[in-house]
Length: 358
Image (cartoon, rainbow, N blue to C red; front, side, top):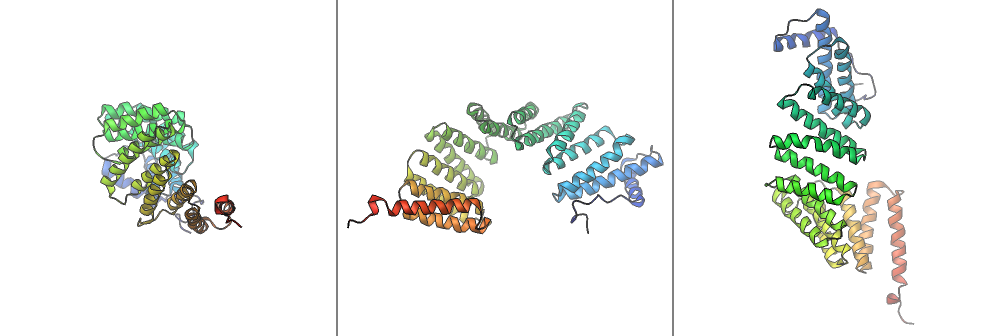
């Protein structure tokens, strides 16, 4: 069985021949001859583990990648081999792989170790690496829904990025902060950071689309519906500029405009925008069936609110077929839709408006 196939097996040990070959290459590259034979051997083993880790990382096999980076670290640390930067970089890669493997405890541990190492040797390049680590730590805590901690980590690289005039990276970071404030329903702070994003970037990009979109959601939740629709429409215009009329981002924003119109009680407008959103999603080359299902359900409920029960039943029927295809007949959501359709049909058939006089 290959290493790739068996993710739960022990990592493959490095042979002496492999270690000698990698050290010979390292010496040729670095002109570093001031090492004992034993240090040569250990350094070669560590480098070979890192090479293998890098291969698995490039294949997004983060569990095995972390194991190989860990093996390299276990060799380097006791022997105090390699430069400070060389060992700190290993901690950084371990943190990245553990994060992607969703081992958040180990990811946090090694990212913090790497951060401490980079901050102790200040340079322009280490500043950028530190900014990246802060951002990764923000992601790590946001993924665990620890939003206040995530915000603190996201805020730390902003000063570095702004001082270096990294406008796009600064805007991304401001979006991350805004999203966390949305998650804890601190809408004023969220608006502040999304607005900072729009003030900072004067070219169309994914960051500006997201900022307009998120602002729209915040305004809708604050019942500022006109402002919400304006923001979502701006996001559509930008998405079309970036990716054309069939942009999935445009479909997402049309769905959000429809939701806003539903909140306003303007059901015909809501239905129109749901239909436009659904058309774009269904015409994608790689159709996202989950999003199709979501919009179909929203459209069906739009018809219910508009008292167009026949159209609602047709939509629910399409939704039910799709959910069965995705999740099977026994899925809880399938059962909920079946029950809702049965109750809707009964209430419609026995409504006074639909009972013929005897």
